[in-house]
Amino acid sequence: MTMSFLDKAKEKATQLTQAAKEKVDDIKDDRKVDDLLDDIGRIIFRQRTEGAQPDDDATIDGIVAQLKELDAKGANVLDKPAPPAEPASAPAPEQAATLPPPPPPPAG
Image 1 (cartoon, rainbow, N blue to C red):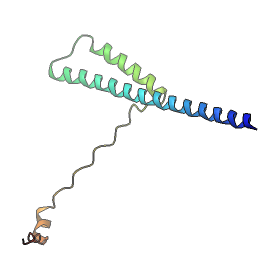
Image 2: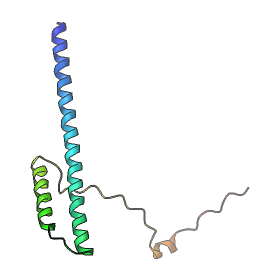
Image 3: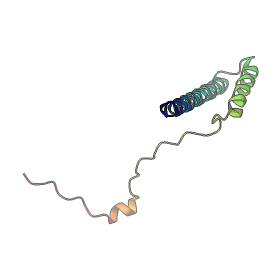
Image 4: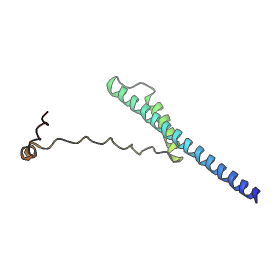
């Protein structure tokens, strides 16, 4: 009976270890995707501001090939991170005129 419990515990630990390894691999792949997309962005920015370099097309082709491999493995290549929340905007001028004035500060 004890052996059965230990076997189940060992199996569960193995499953958890494998799940953790897969999560770490996913995070590494996502970081690699971000790095590669940053590289493409830098190349394009340089092309637009300083001009193209002779090896730009080959470099971009290599980066795209790596991104395709990561995409095939299930990495989020085209998914954008959630945009930051927009700050609350001030009321429109016509709304501001209809709002009551703020209360006076407490006396004291």
